[in-house]
Amino acid sequence: MPNIQYGLKEVANVIFFDASTNKPIIFFDTLKVSSIENESESTEARGGQGNGKLMSWDFGRTATLTMQDALLSDASLAMLSGNALQQSNIKVVGREVLSATGATATKVTLKETPLTNSVTVYKMAGGMMTTEVTTFTTSAKDVSFSAGVKDGDQLMVFYEYTIADNTATLVTFSAEKFPATYRVVGDTVVRGRDGVDRKMQFLIPRAKLQSSFTFTMDAENVSTFDFNLDIIVEAGTNKLYDIVRFA
Image 1 (tube, rainbow, N blue to C red):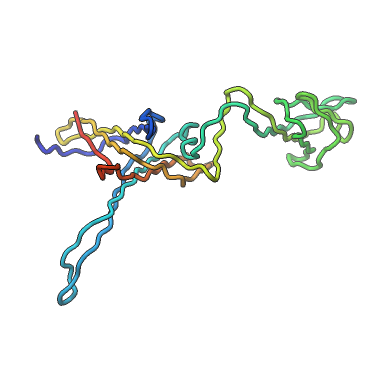
Image 2: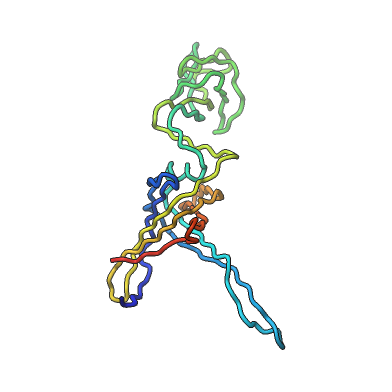
């Protein structure tokens, strides 16, 4: 077989498989970077006049798969949390700025139905919250005021409500849950010096998703999302990963 020289041409598309069932869990096809970082330790023997290096040897090879995704999904965020994705009966916080209406029965109508005892109301002036209003009752989405509010007053209302259908998702980060271990396969393309594009695939039998990550919300820069995995030696083979190039 000829020794084909090639350059790495594309970021990899990466699939995570469940380590116990071998079923695919998630597919990453919007990565900006996918790299396998290899490290090892070394030691040496020195002696003689000048204490020169006589020999050296390596040990403790390790590898890390580093991925940077341009997009985040509910599934990938749940993987980082180590918890299952929840999709029903999710409690959220509402905040609305409303104008009170009614000369005698002054009220505002919220977009959602608040949970019991979850409503807080403030008067507004110059775009700022000023005085808290406590003289009100709630009925469904209506907040009615018995005193302290007149027609046309600007109010900011905070409240909690529940999303009961499947239009919302919840990912919980808890102190006792951490990301799992997966089998990982990545597909990319290399271009040979002959101008021919060929497929390349890396296969990682076991990789532990690291729990450390940064969730950045930046007004001036588009955020990216890092997924870093420690590659673990496969039992019985002492293998870290394979790289296959094929037509």
